[in-house]
Length: 236
Image 1 (cartoon, rainbow, N blue to C red):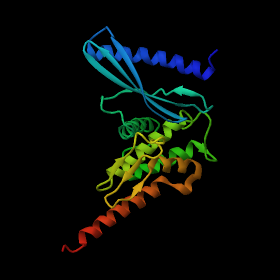
Image 2 (image 1 turned 30 degrees about the vertical axis):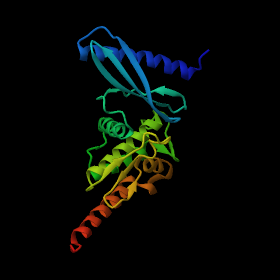
Image 3 (image 1 turned 90 degrees about the vertical axis):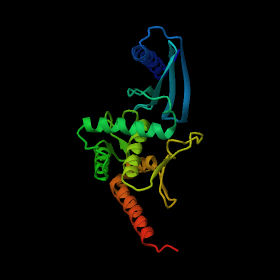
Image 4 (image 1 turned 60 degrees about the vertical axis):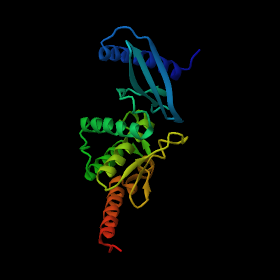
């Protein structure tokens, strides 16, 4: 007999396959599915697994990205957030940016001003503060649903905000890293790095003293100051 979590995951996979099949058929204007290729992209933590499903029909390949996470009871479940993605979006950096875009829409729907500004990171602090207690998600709160996925998405949003508001900042990730999601970083022109997903996890466990907004403000101001100092240096 399958465990309850495995049964739930199995039934959700069946439902996801039906949804993906209909979307692929509509996009390809074709009813016959020749093959479905399912590939695990990463299973680097107990709370986060990514899979790529490619539907082959009428000479076309329609790719989807599937995420699996854990609920507040610790059971593995298929995350409700599913989205058709371009074929090239299969690495951890692209996945983080996609997750950031999704969480921004979800936060806006909940009344948080996730508008990609540095000030919007106050809203990330507020979201975590309102939905956690003593370093843990409050039961049945938005943060408690698929915790690993949510922290990854919030880290993606935090990193993308910092990247957009800093000069010469860029994402860096290694899909071969067994902890690729947690070690996802933002690099700067001076060679320094920050780790947004780790920072969000630290905000959850450490409380308001680990403010994401204050941290981002310091990081971006430091980057601006170093750029200004470099610009003033005399050329030889």
